[in-house]
Amino acid sequence: MQSTLGFNGGYMSAEAQVTIQLADHARHVAKRDAGLAWLATALYAAFAVTAVAIPGGMHPGKFFWVVAAPLVAFGAMFWAYSDGRQRGVEASRLTLVTVPFGLLTLAFGFGAVALFLGLPIVPQYGPPLLMTAGYLVLGVRQRDRLMMGAGIVSAITIVLVTLRPVDELSQGLLCLAYVAILLTARIGWRLTTRVAS
Amino acid sequence: MTHPAVHLDDTIHQRVRLGILAVLLESRRADFAYLRDALELTDGNLSQHLRILEESGYVEIAKTFEGKKTRTWVAATRAGRSALATELATLRALLKQVAKPSRS
Image (cartoon, each protein chain N blue to C red):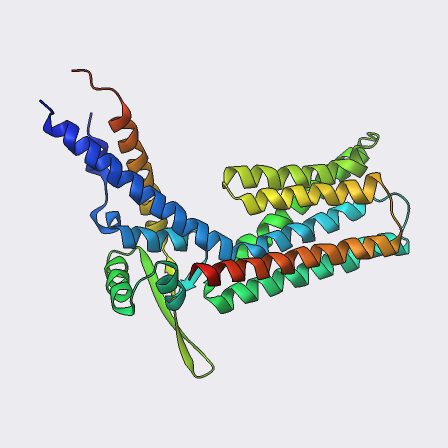
């Protein structure tokens, strides 16, 4: 004979599973709509920290990565935030600012210590790698694929810019490609939302 | 040992209210129209659930004027975020409990 507890257990199990699925779905939708600013903010941090890894003094290429690329990425972050807000979902401004700047401080601090200790290579490649690792850890911890993607984008940027030096035109095209990725992602999400509704 | 179901919160155990808090957990705040569309609710239904959540101290509702339009923003409170985390943890514990083979 099936016990009452057994019946309740089965019922509650199904109920609990459906409830968890609904909560996960709702979180996923909000994460998708509020999350694009995260990708841009990670790009901003990646561009800023990558500039450090470019060898040599201040030259036009380095200036591009130190000033122009981060400004474009910051602009994209602001646009993504405003767009999300207009659609009715607002990302946390405090987190958007504190996470990249916190990671930047950690990365540059790490680089400065390595430089002070006279360690070879570490001051150049340590900060970008720390930044990438930071985004990957945050992404895994938050179960946020966008954040993990941002970490990977950051890693690709570092590899392209530091390990295979390219001219200014290619660097400019790379930056434009990132902006295009952001726009495509945005348009893709909007289309998906329209189809879903 | 108490059964995990004892820890379920009646206020947010209701699916729509749990969905509202889940959306708010991923953002700083969301507006009324966004919540209504994301959770596929009617205006009246959403209003009713928001009122219950607000009375329980789980959400805060603020009205702002943007141009000539009024916009209703909803944000989860610290208590709301904590309650949602507890609720989901309880549900997961419940699932584990049910999945365990019976001793009898």
